[in-house]
Image (cartoon, rainbow, N blue to C red):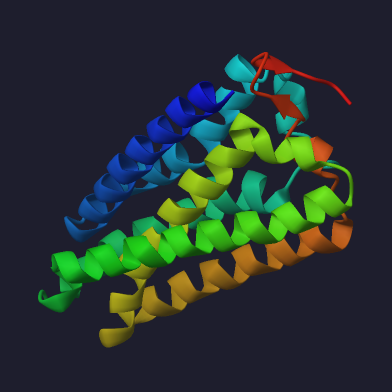
Length: 212
């Protein structure tokens, strides 16, 4: 178990670093076509790929708006992709300096990592208390908390906060996207989604999907 899990975690770490770097670069370089692709690779593509090819889950279950996560299906796929495109447009007018320094990029990455760890810890308490502890081990749960969350949160901090220094319609638009995403997250919470609808119980000893 430990060997397989360690290899998977190392792979996720390498993937997260690569996608984070490409996301920041694409926005700072004004690559409006590349920035949303990085968001999709950080969350929907990665998680859907793991769900379909590793966890062997049906595609229909991933896009079920009745039982799926709205913050994932709508937020990550459309709202956050729109936000980074707007950031890429705005960066053409952002003064170069501290916000392109390695110190700022590392700080943003650290904040994203901390957010992912905190989210995993918080979810862990709830999952275990509700009897869904094995879902914390699923590939999609690990990818969400240690790739999607750090890359998207840290990436938006890195390329979004600088927009506050050059306030324009871009700033308002990105803030609007963030508000919409937060509303979707709150809606998911209020809907009381079951962890089993998001991440299956997973046993790394047998590398197989175990249905509860």
